[in-house]
Length: 362
Image 1: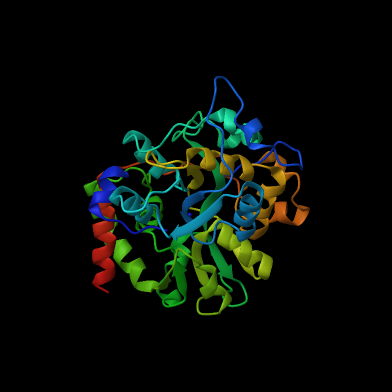
Image 2 (image 1 turned 135 degrees about the horizontal axis):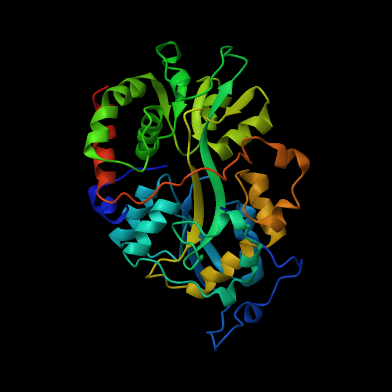
């Protein structure tokens, strides 16, 4: 899940199931390309430029794909959808694969910035669970392949914090000042205040932003660290006692020490689905689709879950996980009833300005 934005981006702006033919041998590129009509034959070698979230793609995946196909993967990272969009739309570097979240996907589709996928080259798409299909941002998976699902929740170091923490209101209390890590994500933080005040986090209007501003200003003052790349680090180091973080980060903390309790905020939260997509100016579309099909194999998708235990939308890969992995409360929270963020267009710039100004005034 990580967001810095600029007005230019936001004009455009506004899980993961992956794998599997169920076979352990690697399908030949020619077989993956089979389908209706002739398709260009993939060539071994070459390069693939992947622009994805930090701490989200295991090196073993990249190495395995390169060993099998001869295609070198250049992996560049970002910390927010807005950062990704800014660089993507600026032009400079061409990417063959990006890893946007659902609302960024909506915006990119509207702007015709994504290439439709050739499903004949991605037969392992069949492994994606029904819960990750028919989503508002790409109902037919025409443009995207789910990578992982996530949500935002609260992590509490129960060795340090003895009183019950049930929601955002319990976290953002003066008594916890300087002991909180929060995602460095403007839209996320605004959404936490909005749901606390009974608002829909997609209903971003000037009036609603004005209503939440005083509370948001107070909450920002209480945070010691804003970190979307690795918010677990401050908790592991003992620099803070409470975090509002991605569920995958919370799952890693729980694996490390059961004292790190994961809490879904009582006020409500949302789900996010990060996916792979191919930009309109990608130079290696076939290689990108080969990579999509590769990561959808159950045994490959399992590696992703082993390293980054978010919610894996790949039903065949889940069958390979241990009972302990499946029982991790942060890895598999009840996402079914949660809404996703939607593209809010120019309102994203209003959020960015509000949070940036408030942080600058502290």
